[in-house]
Image (cartoon, rainbow, N blue to C red; front, side, top):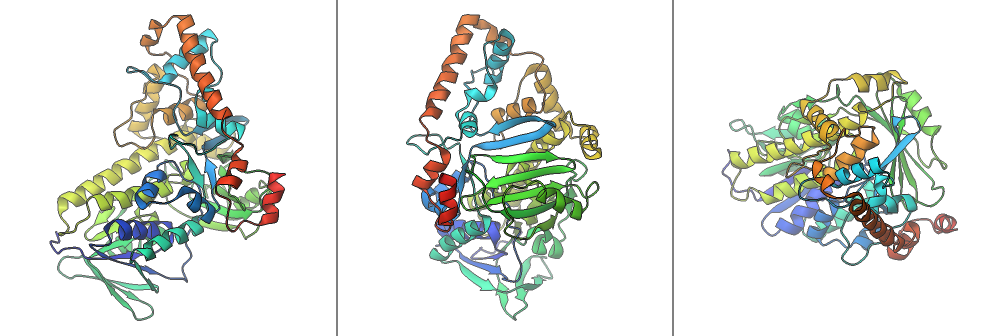
Length: 506
């Protein structure tokens, strides 16, 4: 490998991924390295990833980001989960909330106690035992002292990139304007040595980070790393996005509405609503998708619908030679569970943890690639679950999803839960037991039995155990104010239209 110390880092591309990498490394490693970001104003970013998951708190804590300041700057609202509508079948909805369901014991998860309670007629819906689930349905939330950080955000991705850009500049990151015209490689090692820009500038570096989006200008076009295509299990390959004026008060969850050949998102910000339709081009044309989206939005469009093409999958190596792919250049799993920004963040943190100050060694590269691959595979299975575990057979698209081959790992998870109600989480896996339980049960998979340890409780003791959790959950949520009222108090947008905000408070 390359034993040359890494002093000069070049980030190719901006957007959320590029500026997240720049801000993080500039602030946390900036005294030891020089960071340059190359970006062209002529190249637009995808910029539609506007929903996050709670793991973003980790990076924000590292960067010392004030939550209220960040939310005001990005027109953000709170997100407590995702509402899945028409996924199990038309007219059947459920919520995948953040946080935890009830209380576990050493031998089994809360779902086992709830399942016995269901048989005995002692319970209400499982979401009544999770504050974030109940809060999302009742439109209540607040950030309070000593509260678990189980909330996420809806945000403006373009404004978020600008917010991170300021942090990067404050800690010495340099930006060079220009479009990459050529990637120069060392004839002996095959490493990237420099970038030539269309304006004649020449940018040299020791380590290059590819944030050039789906194309992968460095990791693929220059280094020919290869790509594993998952479209046979995740058939949607297109999306159309449009923004609308806000109608009504923003809810505290993302809406995911299954349609005939894909699904529609609805993401409420303080000043507008983000909308999109993810679809499969084998079953729906771009024109049909645009019309289907425009027929199912609320509020007046404020921009023209934009079609985005993609291929689900992953680079075979996220780190190849002296180039690391972060963002869409590393791979893409559709935004159904809002994992995009999480994957950007995880790659940045992982790189900083094993940053090659004294030179690149193969063991670090292999470890980075293994962790990246494992994470992508685990998230991939969770997303496939939503499509495959369905009662829908009303369109060719849904019939394909229900009948398609799935991975052995997902098949095992489903059978394990079906037969025993068990969910086992690997140490570094993103989605925990509560997430798998909510989605599998929401999609119609009910376990055939519960863990026998639950029978050590008598019916009265079980009822008291369940009632206490439910009452505690209800009391906690009752102490939260209205979600929108709290936003107006805590983090009102700096750019939202005053008249629009007044209309929503009425």
